[in-house]
Length: 69
Image (cartoon, rainbow, N blue to C red; front, side, top):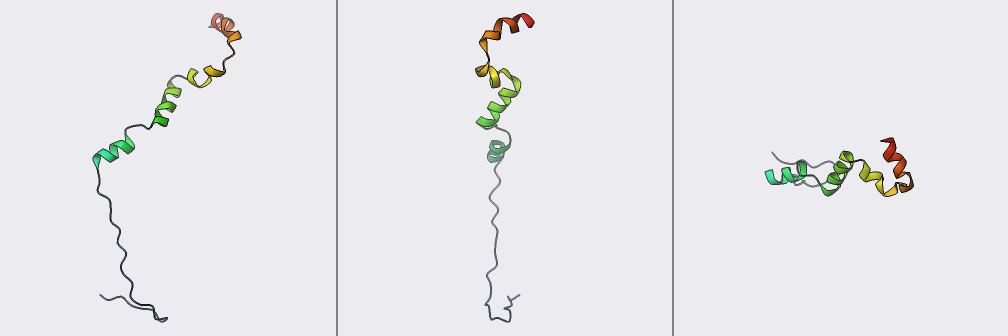
């Protein structure tokens, strides 16, 4: 099969190829299973919500909060 040129006189075009990178189980696991540092921090915050507000806590309220439960 030969390439056709159009009426304006453009020449033949080289075919365009896409080369798929080799699949790697190690890369897939790294990208999809092992969490990033940011994901780990967000997960810890979801398990322990105190981590997101303790640095802003008003310690003068501590005794009242302790009594209230």
